[in-house]
Length: 140
Image (cartoon, rainbow, N blue to C red; front, side, top):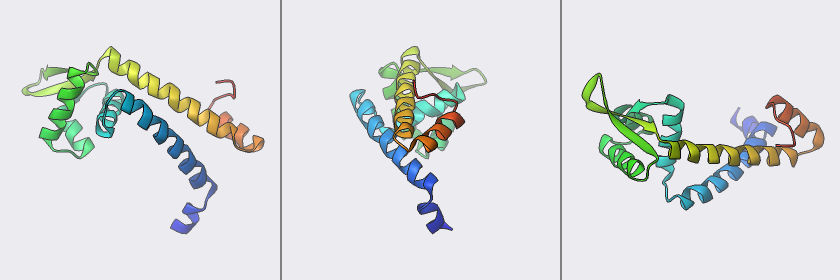
């Protein structure tokens, strides 16, 4: 089974896509002096809208103290806001700031460009199917 996966067209395509996305991500996050875990946290918070530090800690598989330090840095650099949980005063909730949302939007634009460029580098028949399936056009 795994040999079939490793040589499949979808694996070749997704590996190429991931390599290009992660390479660009490395450049963008280094420009902001962020760690991979911080970027992962921003994405989790973006998808959740708001999350407690304890829940984020579990999602990232980090200790509560490591997650708290990660959050402290993101609050100091204006990526996140931290407020007291109204249902549990000992717990804190984190949300994205406008700056944090703008940063993730920047990453999204880069990611879409990479997907589009990578897809259009494939043979036309395949490229058209991929972009059509994604609801994209070559003009993005």
